[in-house]
Length: 432
Image (cartoon, rainbow, N blue to C red; front, top):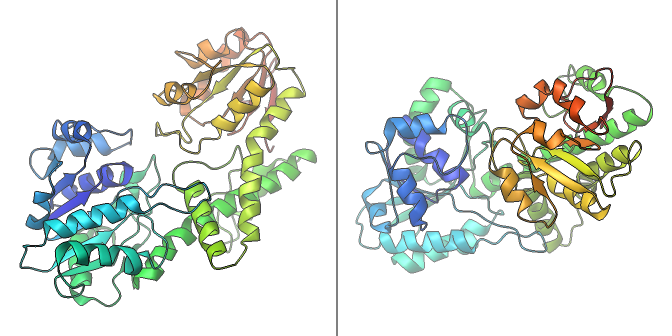
């Protein structure tokens, strides 16, 4: 099939490369000329394991990029993957999605054949009917269901494992409101994946498909906050929360995934989607009290790390190593990172945070503050530091044993359970 993908961020770039791997001819459309140039040169614009080999294999053959929407009508279907950022009240701003749909509509105005627009951007239920479909109709002069179709096909790809998550999905959700042509096109697009991996395929309405995405992320965020709350209680009683969680995970009603307590959740999805669903509920005069507590627990975790550090050292005037800037390993994304509030807490106490991350995330995060140093290595960050907090579980941090000897005060608060306890190291696990 010929496929166009609007937007070349985390979702769009991964989607375009993976669709090319399925055998489709893909054109990525983005307004950023630098990203387009990099994609056409076979260079990944984001840090994502497994992405670069796909670009190496398909750039210039099955995959190309352009800033021109004229490529859209030459394709069978278009995926819209542009961002839906949060407003101050937590609600999402879908103006970029609306603009992309309008541009797609204009591009297909002269196309005789039916064209399918597939929304992969995360949108609140009802927005496809109330905002996006009218935008396409107005721009194209076509009627939905006749000249074009509109489907919702949410993604469930985690940063750091997005390529694998696409290739080995736990489900495919196809929201088409009974439009047979839309369903057939989506089914044909994913057929190589279904044949190879055989995931469950959920055929549902567009509102349901949109809500499934939110429900998925909010449930996982809630599960993490719950295990973190339990972990905080375990810590106060001298109980290893990881042993407790291992036993909990044996219950198939609970499951072992997302039971690793620690510094909390971040990234582009959990914070934004939780806030968006809360805002959407409030628009209908429903107060989502449980979700409010889910967020409150998550906000508290980095500050608990600072409090544990203060049990052993006064950070005022001291160098404190902060290991990890990305919100999780395998990415350089600092959106929602728990390192941000931890750094804020250290600065408020008069400390000098010394930040290290193996990616560009350290420089990116440090640029948001005055008084944060960036180290070239974890060992450099630890040297002469009067304490350290571990915020991201990069594998290299598990091999830092000797580097702790260079600290002025060997105090480590581990928020990710990646540092080994040893003699001569004052070690505090956040929830164990």
